[in-house]
Amino acid sequence: MHTTDSDRSSPAVARASRRLARLAFAVAAVAGAACTESIPPTPIASLRITPGADSFFVGRTTASAPFAVTMLDANNTEIRDGRAITYTSSAPDVFTVDSKTGVLTAKAAGSGLYRATADGRFIEATVKVIHPVDKVVLNTGDFSLTVGTTRQLVPTVLAPDGSAISGRVLNFSSSQPSVASVSTGGLVTAIAEGTTTIYVGVEGKLASAVVTVTREAVASIQLNPPVAQLLRIGGQLQITASPRNAANLPLAGRTVTWFTNNPTVATVTQQGLVSAVGVGNATITAECEGRTATLQVTVTLIPVGSVTFTQVADTLIPNDQKQFNPVVRDTAGNVIPSLLGRTIAYTASNNLVLSTAAASAGVIVTAQNTVGSATITATIDNVSTTAPLTITVPQVDQVSISPSQATVQVGSTVQLTVTIRDANGNSLVVNRPIIGFASNATAVATVPPTGGQVVTVTARAAGTAIITASVNGFPASATITVP
Image (cartoon, rainbow, N blue to C red; front, side):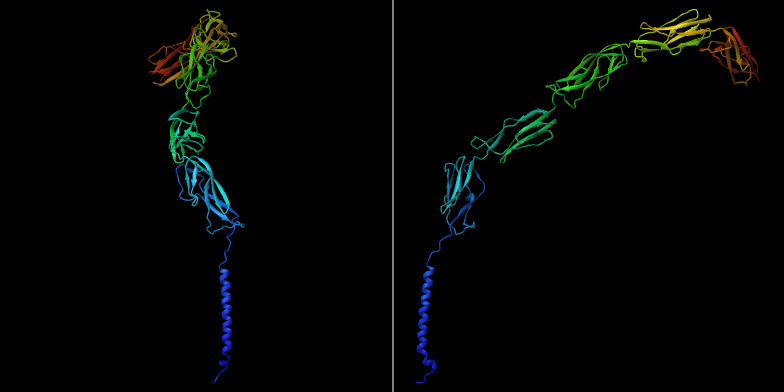
C-alpha cells in the first residue's frame, strides 16, 4: 500500500486529540465546580427611613407603607437585592402594622413607634393617631362691639364622636378687617362702624360669627371752662366741649350742637363762641348724641371809667342849635361801644344861656337869646366829665350878603351867602336854618322864608327884587335884577 506523510502521521494525531479532549473535560469540570459555589450578600450597615405624613386619623388604613425604608451598605450606598424588611408597631392598641407590607391601620388616638427591621438592623419613626375633625364651634353666636373694644373668641374642635380635640391649627379671618380685625389667637378688635363676619377654620371645617360694630355711646360732655362765667357787655367767651365715654375717656369725631336759652343776653355759635349782648343771665347748652352739658353765663354792664366830649369848646349864635356827642370809656380806657339802656344826664351851668335835650347819641344844645357862656356836663353811673364842654353865645354885630347885586335870567337861580360877625369881627357859623329871608317882589324873584347861610334865589319874571336876610334883628340885603 502506498502511503503519504499524512498517512504515516495518523496515529500521532489521534493521540494528540485524545489528550486535548481530556484537558477540555478537566477544564469543564473545574468550571462546573466553580459555578456551584454561593456568593455572600452585602452586609446591611444601616437603614434610612423617609417619613410621609406622621399623623393618621382614627379608623383609617394607609394604601401602602407610610414610610419609605432604604437599606444602606458601609459606603452609604443603597442595597437593592430584594431582602425582606419586617414592620412592627410599638403600640398596637394605637395602630397596627402589616409586618410584610408596612401598611398602617390607625386604631385609637395616641402615639407609638413604627419600626422597620432588616438583617438585625432597625429604624423607627414616631406615629401619631388623631381623631378627624367633624366640626368646629365658637363660644358665641353673632354679637356687637363698640369701636375700640375687643372680644376673645374661643373655638372648640369636635371629633365625630362629639369629643373635643386639642392641638389643631386654627386659622382666623375677617371678611371686613377695616370694620373689625381678628388676631391669630381669635381676639376680635372693633375698628369702625359696620358689619363683618369672623371665620375660624381647621382642617376644612369652618365656624363663623357676624360682628356688628357700633360707635361708643356718649356718656357725658366735659366743658371748658367748667364753671359759671361772668362777662361784660360786648365780651366773648370760647367754650370747648369734649364728649366722653363711660370711662370718662374722650371720644373723637363727634358733633356737638350749641344752644342758648336767652339770646338777648348771650348768643353762641356752633363753634362754642359766646358773645355777651345784654345784661342778665343765660344758660349755654352743649348737646351730643342725647347727652347735654350746661354753663351759666352772667352778663353785666361794663363799669364806666370816664366820660368826655369830642370837643371842649364851641360857639353858638342865639337861637342856634347843635348836637354834641360824648365818649364813654371803661376803667382801662377802652371805648364802651354801647350803653345798653344806660342814660347820660346833661346839665348846663347857665340855663339862661343854654338849654339841653338828650339825643340818641349825645346832647342837643340850644343857645338862648342871652349872650354869655355856659358849660355842659355829662354824667353816667355817677361818673361825670372832668373837662366840661364850654359853649359861648356871642352878640351878633353885623350881617352881610354876597353878592350884594346879581343879574339872573328868568327861570335861573343864584346862590346868596350870608356872613355873620360878632363885635370883634369874628365870623360866626349857624348850624341850622335860623336866618329869615324875604323878597320885596316875589313876582320877580323868590327865596325860602328861612335857611342857613347859603340860600337859593329863583328868578321868576323881568324886574328888580330886593332880597333881605335877618339874623337876630340884624338885616342885610342884595339886589336881584331879572332882565
